[in-house]
Image (cartoon, rainbow, N blue to C red; front, side):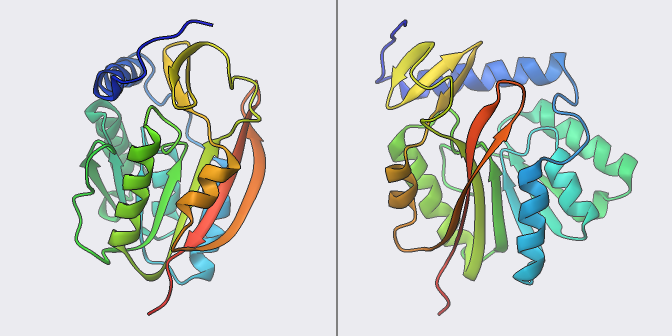
Length: 226
């Protein structure tokens, strides 16, 4: 297993941004047009909670964001890749849901560009387990809580330490391992519980995705009602 300098968070993050940009440019619609299983489950929870507005973090080319829009949610779709967001916006027009989707170019390592209480729900499919340090993940979840309304719902998915790729490939420290150019921060259950501090943790559900398959948790938590 190859090891690299774990202290260069900014350098790793920028390298990952370039890698994702190139990947989306080379493979438009990389993950296809069908929503993920996580998004289908999240949409049902959003409907139960009376959600109208959803922020998706790490929306990519939009398979889940567009599904939320087709499900009649008002969606803000954020990503650090302008290439993927252009694909998302074009597809929103093609599907007739452009009025339901707003794209926002944003790097999750920085504060969210929204005022407090802006959204009913936040959704992130594998965004939190990208090349983010534990400190950056905590900062991001703090920001998510800030921009959610009281009683708002946060659904996120992450690859965890039971995944076949955990502990393999290029190690960047902080439980971050790189395979095929993609760096992943594998979550322990302790990290999930730490991120739920000050929230109401509604559930941690294991599931699998893809051919490996990837082993993930779907985490649901809500902000306290005032």
